[in-house]
Length: 188
Image (cartoon, rainbow, N blue to C red; front, side, top):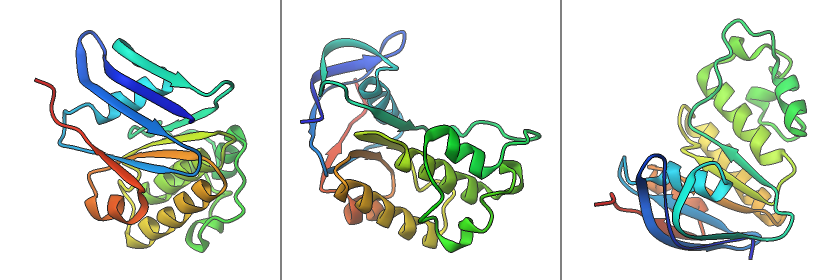
């Protein structure tokens, strides 16, 4: 088991989500769905160790390496950072990028479209050394080709032994790529 959460209640100044229990095994893709405000992103943050846990437990395998992709892309306007440099920062390589992005990886991030930047950030997260990959609304800004390429990249990463948790409102995407789904409700 890579991660196990039991009766987890997490949030910031006050609880936002929970109690939730889940497990994640090597090679598994777990989908997390639910309405806005139910705590999907907060749950990912708690699993990554960046959000306050009020009650319950999160157990991680010893030495577990976690990568987290959030919905908020860093602002890149005016920064002379290329896609290649972003990948190098995370230990990712451009090999395997879709053709529509591979030829542009040497360009500055602020010269790429929102969908191209989104996919590059996802690629950096997926290819970085890690045992668990947490993705928050990864299909945002992606066109259909990008979504299909992402689905293939997720399956490949799982086949290589990583565990993945994917938060998404895209029910078709979740059904197509996830082995199991955890549906959250708004905390009352």
